Length: 305
Image (tube, rainbow, N blue to C red; front, top):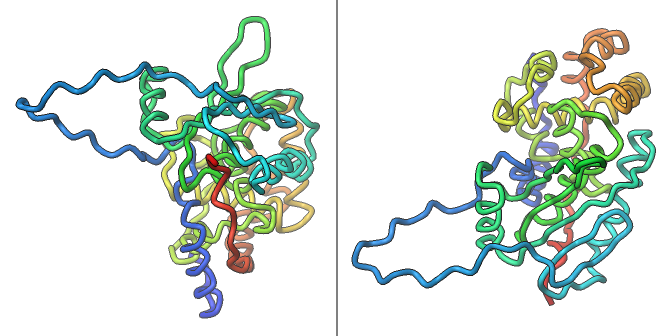
């Protein structure tokens, strides 16, 4: 079911937005390598100087309502990013009709990519190189420790919103299916003014012969099974449920309520069929009707003074 062609004005607007929000293409937490390939050292080269042990940031701790930011440099606490992140739980829990979480998220913010990657290689040596990670570490006799690791890159604002959404959901739900977890994080990684519209995803889906297949997405249990097209589709299903009308929204709300007590409430697709009749066609029609937001500037991210 290919999408109808874009009107020329919409296509131009989407192209401009895709350029402005290019960071969104790499926001998926554990899918995009960012480290440059290592260059072999010549046999004649002098021995490399000793490298300091990899340590996590901890010189400063900036406490906010639901997270603690650990960093080794001074931050400008008046940066708009902090207000944006402070408002994220209300946005997430409000739109999803979930109770607030009391969990505190630990955010470790490295000053450089090199230091971040060196630490991750030492601490989590089996993980591939990624721009940011959310990790829930089991704790004996208590709730998981919720940790986010990232660095001061150009995509920091998007990455923090994405990873913090994962952490917020983990704090109130027993489990979240992989596709839904990533779809929700992809939806809430966008500033509220975007109304959940990811212009790059929208443009890519409209340009392709998109064939929605939620049944296929719901079978995925490993991150490696999902590539860019699957992340786009996951975002699209979430946007359909939250922005197309009350019937689809109620399906999502009811499903999330079930996940509060049941880690495996079954597939969501049959519920969407009951509510929408033909969910795949409903998604195609919905994407064709979405208006891309107007391009606007945004803060890069909180950074060292």
